[in-house]
Structures are given as C-alpha cells and as structure tokens.
Length: 438
Ligand code: PHE
Image (cartoon, rainbow, N blue to C red; front, top):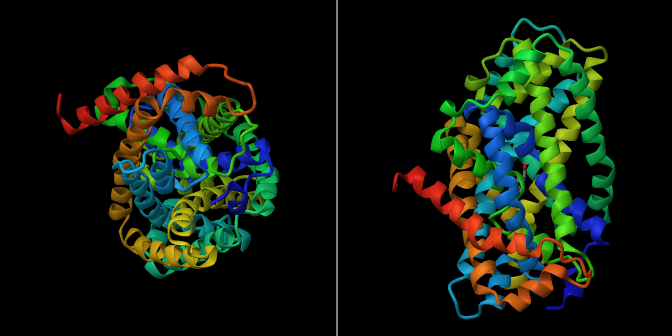
C-alpha cells in the first residue's frame, strides 16, 4: 500500500491543524475544568503540566514516528515494524479505545448540540424560573433527546470521515480554531471582571495537594493522554499521512502548546464564573461547563447570539476530535480488511452510536466509560508505545524518522531520555500506585 493511495496532508500546516483539531476538544473545555475541580485545583494543574511536558509530548512524538515510518493504521504499523510479534495487540487496544471513547464522547457532544439549538432559539438565555442546573438535569434525564442529538452528532462525524479527510476539514479548522481561541479570550475578559474572579482564580490555581493524592495524579496523567489524543493510535494514524520532509518535534511542540493554552484558558474562564454564580465546583462534575456558561451568558448583552456562537465553536472542536477517533477505527478496517471508506465509516459509526446509548441512559455509566478509557486504556497504551519506540525500534530508524528530511533534530537526546525512562517509569509507577501495589 503506497503512501500516495492513502492520501496525505497538504503540508506541515495541514498536519498541525488536523492534529491540533484532534487534541483540542471536549477534553479541554468540558473535561479539564471538572477534573481540576475534583482533584485539588492548582495541584492538579501542576501535575497536569508536568505530565504534558514529560510524558505527553514525548509520546506524541513517538506516535507520529510510528505512523510516519509505516504509513499504516495502528495495527498495520506495529505489524510492519515488528512482524511476527505480539506488538500489533497495542494497535488493537487503540482501536477498541476508539470505540469506547467515541461512544460517550458523542453523548456529551450531543449535549452541546442541544444547547446550541436551545441558544439559537433563544430558549437558553430567556429568563427562566428553573436554574441552569435544572435545565442540565432535565436534559440528562431525557433519554430520547440525548439519543437524538447523539445520533445527529455521530451522523455528522461519519459523513465527514466517509468522504475522507479532505481539504474541507483542514480549511474549516484554519478558520474555526482561531475563532474558538478568540472567543475564549472575550469570555476571559468577562470572567476576570466578574465578582467571583479572585475566588475562582484562587480555587483554580492554588495547589491543594491534600485533595490530590495518587488518584488525582493518575487523573492528571489520564487527562494529559486524553487531551493530547494519545495512547490509542490517533496520532499514529494522523502521522501516517505526514510526509517525510517535515520536522516532527516542531509540529509536536505547536500541538502541545495550543492544546495546553486552550485548557488553561478554559479554566481561567470557568472558575471565576463558578464562584460568581455560587456553584459548588467540586460537586458539579460533568455538568460544570454546561451549567455555568449558560448562567453567565444570560447576563450578557446579545446573550443568545454569544451562547449560540460559543456552543457552535465547542461543537466544532468536538467534531474535529471525534473525526480522529473514528478515523483510527476506519483506517484499520480500510487498511487491514480492504473495506471501502464509506462502508467502514458507517458500520463502525453505527456500532459506536449503539454503544453510546448506555452513557445517555446513565451518567454513572458515562463516568465509568470515561474513567476506563482515560485512566486505564490510554495510559497503558501510551506506556507500551513509549516502550516500543524506546526499546524495540532500532535507534537508526528512530533517529532518521525523528528528523525526517527536515534536518531538524533539536531535542533528540532529551526526547529519547524521556521516552526511554521518564515516561514509562512515571506511567507505571502512577498506575501501580493507584492499584495499590506499592
Ligand atoms: N483529545 C480529544 C479532546 O480533548 C479527545 C480524544 C482522545 C481524541 C483520544 C482522540 C483520541 O477532546
């Protein structure tokens, strides 16, 4: 299978945008704020940033190397690099993780869809006797409505993936991602001048290590994997469409910087508003942003318009991530079984849609699926990917892929040190601690 027939990015910028589109999603705006509030605020943020730099970025580079050197889906890539070994199982785990994550991701994205339409119809921001919390609870208690929006979201994702990752999504990302960033900056101005700003920033940024514990450290690590789309082959798949002339380090640095900036920005917006509107952040859980942002929008001028714009951007961010999740499964079915893209997208998408229904039925189930994926599957996948690149792949292959044809080899030794020792040891220790083995 030649690289040509599989297609490739238009260039370095196309790859960076698509990968950033995968990384930036509900993980940054929905998940990061509630994970932070449940795990010691600033203490969580510190561990999260350490995990991103020492574990996330090295593994991101590793995944791109695996994908680029083989131009294959995750299973095919391991098969090509380590024929006759058990390593392709790591790729299989990634495909399974794609099913698990996208199943509940589509339910949460469906919530955003619901809010988008409610906002556009002016229903979200009209003065209402029930609080924003009640609105959210009534949505999550309404199975039919959730499944409807889940289906709309999945159908959109499938339609894009079935057509191939063409210039459309690249071009749309180029416009919409900066717009999301700009919009968060506008909200930031509003949040920082709101009465709860001081308290909110203190909650977000003051380290409370007592509330962190090993469970919190694992949560921060899992958040790093989840937010950077690591540990399940999404970046292997996207790397497989990257051509040799580009520098992997530079691309990875940009992706990590953008993803982290959006998450921190989301925290700087959400927490001041949480305290302004008197919510209990540690109790709010997955409803946090869906409750607090509409609450804030109500008080703004042109509130319906702003709320509509915000949820549209959030949805777009979710869509570019969902596409990458489905793409892992589809690339596998297309490469390994010769299915057509359309057949693979629709079959896998419909199965994933069905798997998502339990998450719409029960938020407990959604939380469980999210936990299994982010704190078990992704860290284990990431650990194995790091071990593979650092200890199994020949150094010469790794070195030539790191540099590509770009001639940029900056940071090679630091990267290799992280990927050989720091990342695997950190992930192993944190996982084993949590299981109680120490
Ligand atoms: N990174 C995405 C987000 O933050 C989620 C994701 C995880 C996408 C794993 C692909 C793979 O929303």
